[in-house]
Image (cartoon, rainbow, N blue to C red):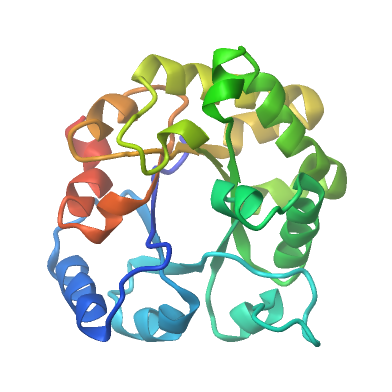
Length: 252
């Protein structure tokens, strides 16, 4: 079976107001979207339930983060159990901003991933290298080091509910984007590592999506690559062009 194309929109700490949120919902609800694409948007936690209730049924909602405990004295955190109870199907884990700004280790990301899956959530698992690491030809080694604790923590069957988002840190919010060739190479390396570390079946079936300054202008070429199964979109997910990115595979 071919892997279903996946387009996620990571709103980060946006929109700033309820009016902006309403405008975003209106654009998505009125858009003509490729029905073959799985579309998931990740707003700030304060908007999760509202968007789940007001968005059209063919767009899913994701949290941007969660902790690994089900409840307790963890000020400011949100638990997988709370997300599952609120009928939020996805959570983003391991985003480079969490890894760098909030100093989350790959081992912590693995703990969170395990907890999320055990609660019934699906996970968008982010990996990627810095510019310095890219220039030192360490991309594959860095990505594998980020994946290794997760692989060691999970069962093979868990991977059916994981989407890997390859996001080179140097391309996030910078306007720089990996070329289609660079993206394809990194995705193929990830798939080869999954085949070796878990199984060929997991490598074949796991969706690996690209993130890093994806726009309507560059998405079609990226979508043509055999190992690019979609996108995790940042800034452009807050603009009308997000619709064009969702439809990239159809028009590629």
